[in-house]
Length: 266
Image (cartoon, rainbow, N blue to C red; front, side, top):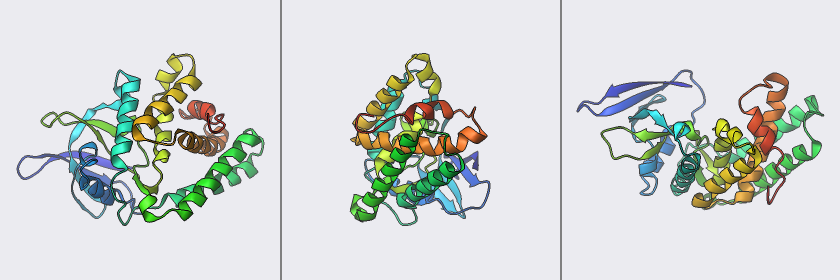
């Protein structure tokens, strides 16, 4: 959704300029990056914001050729994701970041609409389960105090974690948030649907995705059951949309596995 160019600062600093390709609703990206940069635990985990203006961002340069998608150890990559979720959740939620409750409501409305259009596309029990999860989460978010809400990245998958630039201390750095304020368990789904080739290669996709859920949830201190239920609800919504339109989409296979998860033990 953006174009990114490598640039240099007045003192030769390695930066990048990120400019959105279209004008749209503000995402809160700059506000979230600034909040993370001001928190001692998260600042080393997130790309540095140098400046922003009219939707354009001037950012710390990272190594675009080294991301977690290509990390040779899938479980080590999952641990980085879990550690990043833990670090990012400590920052205060700034003004300008959309509330998660809006996306929860949108998902529920979307599932209902897709089910009316394609009533026999998925097992009714799995659709009902997804709607129940979203209704419960909506109720919890309505009743949450501002102090209970966490600043959530919103799209934390392997391609959105890059290695630091070569002239900086080596670390994994998170980029490109679609920030929201809500529960950190929301973060796990994006990673579950990625690195699918690693999953298929084992011959047991369900076991491997459950293991991935465990590995990410533990260092982040997440409620594993809630993270799995949210992933199942997202899988229902996406499959109801994708199967009639793009049945060969890359996310259909992982979502077909996740949609069968059934609750506390997934």
